[in-house]
Length: 336
Image 1: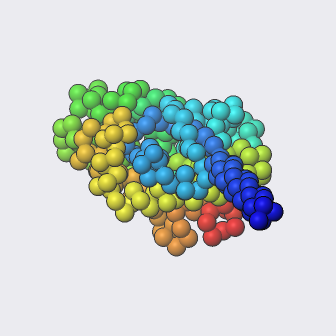
Image 2: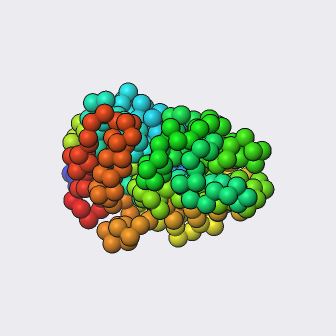
Image 3: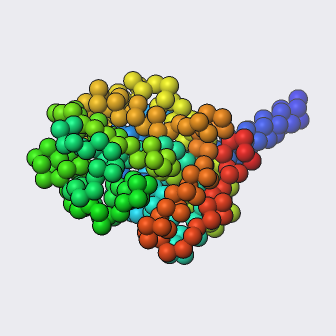
């Protein structure tokens, strides 16, 4: 009997050790599955990126074993500086900043088209008599800053009509660029779709809007990584893109819920109605004919090449960029 009790005790002890080891190994495995990934943004935490800001509530990245860290910025160039300095793994940046960095010798890859639609425009008051880009000749046009996407896309628009900045007067207005338009300090202003929506909410009257995308519709923002990071972290980046794609699908399918979450997470999210309007605009810019066929995030090499060639012609970059050499098409779900 004593022998049986001892044997039984040893067996219970062994099972206890095995169970403890299993629990510890499971805990270690779960911990090791959560990898940090830092995303450098071009903006502060604003409503239009609520799909990222909602991570504590929705857990899109957590479900892919990733702990997302969003680093706010003040422009696409800022996002790339954070990337190139090693503070971030992925940059949320505009094609112009991407082209400029490549032109200076940075080894980068674009891996996802965040907004395949061009969101920039040039707006004038309906009473101005300006109806098309050719009418901008000799006029004063406001831009956020001389290094902003508003200026670059104004140059693109003018170029498509055979004009250049020499044919207009560019005026730096800052972010509140519609006030100078209303006050008559400029004849037109370069803006974005969300900027125009906000101005209308604040009492902007009848305007005529020239969409840059009607003349050259290329991406507004991309996810960009360092070439070395792309080569060494493909599985991690695939999970990152899968999570981001799921977050966009949520924002498209539930704009009302996204608008409500923006109240808590976005610095500009106090007005639910305005939040929803901004979210609907961003949802619209997240899809295209190409993404309808091949999935969200699909990079349009043809339009990006046209944009890079336009930047070269404008003198914004010094050498031709072969876009097919600097994009990755193997990371999106289904493209492995």
